[in-house]
Length: 172
Image (cartoon, rainbow, N blue to C red):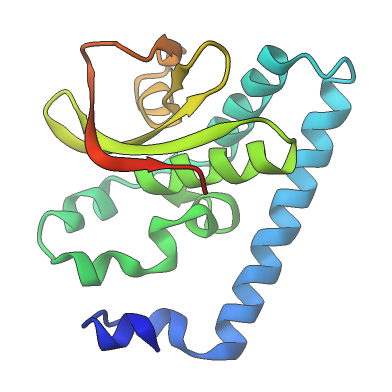
């Protein structure tokens, strides 16, 4: 496959039956959470929906400090496992920033909320977060979860705490 031709060792994702099972589990988690969010916010107000997605991600996910420490010891190819993704966040219940941002993005997609996943640095550390379409605000579920605050919900996109890497704004 294309990833292995480029040197990625993704043994945890290569067996078709494992991938299909994980995709089904992720789809079920997304369906369950998006239905619950929709039921909580019948008025469909975008800000209320974004808040509900933010809160659902934080309630569902625990930050994985061991995984975070591991990231610094391996090359990028080793970071391709499911624990780094929305699957890790919503099915396994723990991940790092990429999984939080991916989970937030996928839930927004299910609810027809415009959202982008962004990579760059925050507080001098490589990081992943989201930008939402409410006059372009930042939502950072990772920092809110790890700090126990909601200080990173709807931050101005030009916040000095966030520096977006060139070419790392993803609409998918």
